[in-house]
Amino acid sequence: MRKITVLGLSTLLVLTSFFTSCDSVKNANNTQKGTGIGVAAGALIGGILGNNLGKGGNAALGAAIGAAVGGGTGALIGNKMDKQAREIDEALPGATVERVGEGIHLTLNENSVRFDTNKSTLTTQAKANLDKLVTVFNEYGDTDIQIFGYTDNTGRAEYNMTLSGQRAASVQAYLVSKGLKATRFKTSGLGIADPIATNDTPEGRAQNRRVEFAITANDKMVNDAKAGK
Image (cartoon, rainbow, N blue to C red):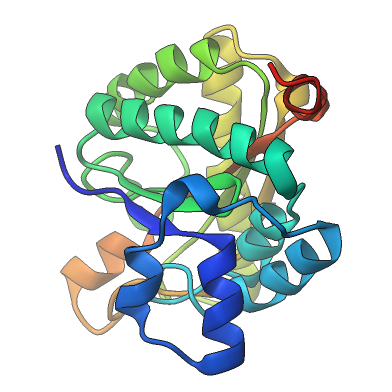
């Protein structure tokens, strides 16, 4: 199994204050991510995650994951997210899984969910891969899931913004059709923003036609963690 990147909240605070290297973030102690960090710190982390997630960064996704519960509650949530991240990684090796604070950043690229140019339709292979996620999402029902759609830079920016939203919506609609609750999801289209590869080659553009997920604890998971469950 591939190593899951870990971006711990406490390490990110050190990163912000002392400009430590990316390696120190990746090697953070995962069990300590929630300790001593409250909601205000989480908001700060959300503001800087856009410059640290993945190759291009996603400020919207960073803000979604960055709001921390903190303390022992945050550590319990983090442990649950650790398990979910490992199961996603095992179920869908073609995806990129990152543990960020008390959440999960999941990128479905051309190796897992592929979109053709100017299309938001899910391919047969994309549906098969999303089916693998359904099993994990069902097991961890106490999470909220934000889906961000992207495009390459082909065509007008306004058109791509609409298309990216349609891609996110297509993924949500398919997951809901498989029995997941619609109330767990929010979708956003971000167009050509935050490329993870060059748009100068067909291969790079294919990578940029993707969806990303921010998976976070819902109120039930937070309340269970506060109760020590």
